[in-house]
Image: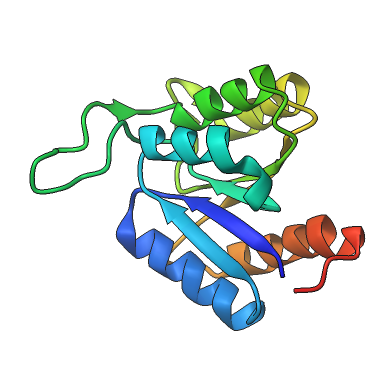
Length: 155
């Protein structure tokens, strides 16, 4: 069974991704974290439980709750997570799933090149998510198939 960690702070986007993955890969196991701090905790401590990480690039610092507002929005939290993975030699592959075309003034295509250059062991590619279009689904499906089935893993 393939296990995926989804790091996404927007509930509607997470629901759409999870629904699609459950439909396309019925035996896949998906865990979700909603903030930078929750994500680094599980990735740094339990990365070996996951075959793949689907990572949002911009997210809140903390999980939103009754007591917590989510902290400061982090426009490049995903890059910081990749940096921490690199420094700790965490080998898990990452697909960035984003709705934005700019990150702190850096265009998505430029960021893609930077991530490939800086984190070649982790960063696989990105998917541009949209509520209006469904082309992200086929792209995500193809990436997951390449990263999981090519390793002879059964979904």
